[in-house]
Length: 507
Image 1 (cartoon, helix red, strand yellow):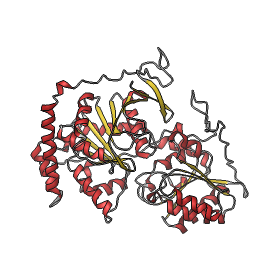
Image 2: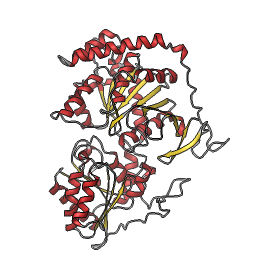
Image 3: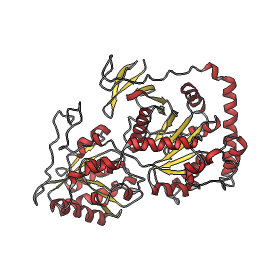
Image 4: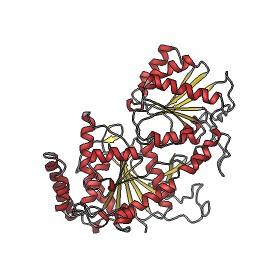
């Protein structure tokens, strides 16, 4: 059964990142499976209004004020009129939100439930329970997930974290990991797919293949690609680099990424005079990540918290040996022979990196086999199929026992068929009221105001006055009848490219 789905999040292209890539790849695969998908996100510099990406994926860039790390200012209600208009225009039946810190995601789920739509939430992050920021975030998450139909987490560790933070029944949470397009992350010795002329760097040259049979004096290159934030372990990286280079003179670093910790990294290089051994690339686009990775032998990931870590899969697919911290869901990502783990401590990270260098020099690791192994482990098509099954469950296509694996007869009476949430306002208020002595009352007030706003909008702007958008025509034969190399028949002009694919904007 085809569904009309709206993916909602503050985090999407052109900003690079794991959540952004997840939404894009999942959406394109769902479209390939016959569903209609639109994406709702905020406007970026030079990107406002409606855009079309490859395969007819429509993106609504809503002009909202961004306050921190591409997150919009939470308004609760002002997003509702625009959101309702998009939902009616596109005839959406399922709203799928992404990201615990996305204001648009939380607001969209609230408004979708008020409009009588099925909702799904995907959590991509881990949070604590003690600091003020985590407490506020967890309370907001509990508010949103009190009335959501189903939750998806990207790892089992992430599921445990989300269940505790939002006080969820574990049956409501599924684990569907991220994936990688293995063809886009090939080692240099792998043949290019048909129509691909191979990797070309921004200066017009092609990256040289690093030697695989390393001698005792050969240079080993360590690659780091990460946002330079505290939670990504940038402070740990800054402390470890001088020690690693001191112990291993024939090692070089390539670091790509940007963030507030970039200035600290540059100061460390100047203080230790390491500019000739550490190359800083700054921010790189996602389609350039592979070009950077294939220049190295080891991928270093010193993160302090991570729900999954898609970049680890990308690095292994490129034939890099991975050194990473044993935190969050990272141990679930790759098998042991591809990874050396370290505690999130300076001494242990330096020691683990030394072990990885020795393993490569002594030929104890066969990195040339990593690409084919990763290709068999991760597939976006599999992710789309499993997500589609979640949609089948929340709309009632699957029986309760078939969807949840066991009967949920002991659950609250406010739940409907197959354990999904009831739309009745009184049942919604009961769920929100149980979120806390004071928070519960505040949440109930928000829901009541949201419902009254919905009634006002239905009267003030009836559905009959909103034009229904035409669906993107399904492609039948590529590269014929005026289609371009991406198999598109664009109605607008070509604007730019994302992940090597053309983007079109309406005139």
